[in-house]
Length: 296
Image (cartoon, rainbow, N blue to C red):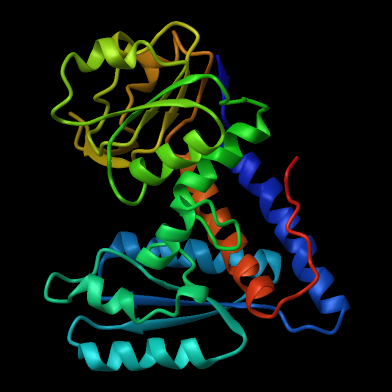
């Protein structure tokens, strides 16, 4: 079994983004900026923002993070988003989710200018994706999964792909990207009958359900490629905490041909694609003659 190393792969794609940013600077063009909004005191959200800031710094993308407490009026958040929309150097805007429960996430996100949507969460950009318009960004985690497979030269065309999980952020857009690359896709969920039997047909199995270690070898066809998108934090019998995916790595790794670890699999790829989207937005907004050729 070969590990699909997300850290190594993300480092490759970050290096490609860094070269593009350097190309801009050599042509006298200022670097793009990612504006992030961290609202409330969610520890995991704060960690993710720091990881994105660090990754941006490594490739030369500027950052501006708005750290706001949970009592910040919605109107103030919206004004700050509008300010970033108006800033010509800001090409990526993201609001770290989840927000504190008293905020209207959909309303706040709707104020992001679609051309600066770093996560590809907005309906306009999702619509462009489903219509096959390539002059827009794609959702970061699904795009990261596709780039990871391409890095390891795993062709999805004509393969049977099973995606367990139908979220708007991962499952649904990933199914579309797989279809676009000519895979035959089955989407599974909590109401799927004979889930194990359906999953065991797959050449490529994607777990994105948010249930720690649910998928063991009984769901996997021998030799299948397994992509674990889940990230869960569980308490072990000794009281220590463990980060794990939706797959039981010890069980599945004995039967899969390729598999992503957790952590170190899809997570780093998601962050790398935030950088890619921020740069690609900048190229599109400013109509720059920069080719976004970052493939291996």
